[in-house]
Length: 294
Length: 326
Image (cartoon, rainbow over all chains, first blue to last red):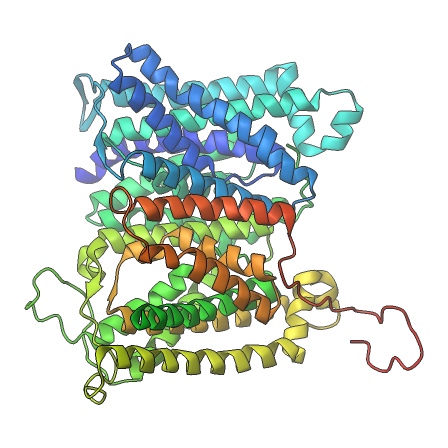
């Protein structure tokens, strides 16, 4: 019974992880920057919505504040700071250190600004709906629908539009794409903005679901998002969604079975097992020469 | 004043052990160990639970799994072994050949999840409140000393351990093993071609680094008498990376200099300043500054203050009397 109910929670968790992981993997697949500051950006998005809520702005603005603030911040970081170090020849590891530094600055900057407090995040949850053993609130269903809409939208963008085609070409072979006249600068802009917007949405969804907000929400959520993106292969939105579903279900099932404190470990256990048993699944992407394109 | 000085000296020796552990793993082995602080924490928790005595329930706020009161220096030995054991486990899935940013991300995830588990599983190591009342070693034997005197004895003891580890890593760095490790770091395929075992060498460096990090944790917890999840956030690992890269990755003395500048002067000295704002404001701002320091350091001096000597595979310019290519 409990185990079955946990499937429902698992789907909601998976939706949140998937939104975050899709934004992460899209950007990572194209630019080859493993962006740890994504966690800090999720926090910034959540706090933007929280701030809008405190100012009693209409709910539409409150919801829009998160992706807007996060998209703008990510685009700025990508185009100025990350681009600066990439021009100076930073390798993939140096870029991780740069994004980690930004993550620290964001997390502890917010920490200092928010007075190290944990705040209540009030958001209407809507009526509880029952379907068999499952119980969802309207808001939870909206989050799941949002994840599906994002997935559908990205799939459409990547497979059916000229921009998506150019984006996929650039992810595989940036130099060739440039020579073929693809406006690579424009595509990088689109990717930073999209990835940031999704980070903001994921951060907002996370605090809507947990009802509390503090400076470490993004960093706390990052391990699962990262694990889903790595498990689902860099750049693959389908992979990210499948991996998120797996991680969401496993973490909630373990929590329901009585090991709430070990639920994230169980999620990570999957990643470890894949690394141990099927290193080849990751090897193809993992040892290829990566060119940083920001 | 004397109290501050002895405290800072102990911190320096503990931090330099950690920095040398990372230098071994990252500087020479090329493993971006973003879980470094977890190995120090493992050593600290291990030393704490084997010296705290059984969980008697006297202090009802403190709960932990394993209780023994082993005599000095056994807790330190157990701390080092725990660090090494955990490194063997983490290394089993994270040291395979993969891109370095993947490896860094996987180790970072391990570290972030470990801290969540220890914070939430209260019965294990007392959750986010951590363990307190860890007995100071030999306090019975040295009871004749003043508190200040004991601090200096401890500083000397930490210095002796640091010296021993220095002799070990300096020797390893010059040895055939050290050269093999750097060869694997620089070109895995070429190293494998001449018969080296990349995975094995990386594992050895990772475990040895874990042992040294665990030892540093044991040394720190016996000095501080307390340990909690607040002491091992991912920011601490980042500070060690900043220290060794600022000082000069791969160079033992450069790494020690970076540790002095970043870990002691930059991170510890401000804690003795008068309180500004609410509790924790200075800490938070320090991490913002550390992040900024790294960005500046990478922009203006990417190879560090004392760069490591380049090891040439072929003699540079063959001149008269070049017997030794190094």
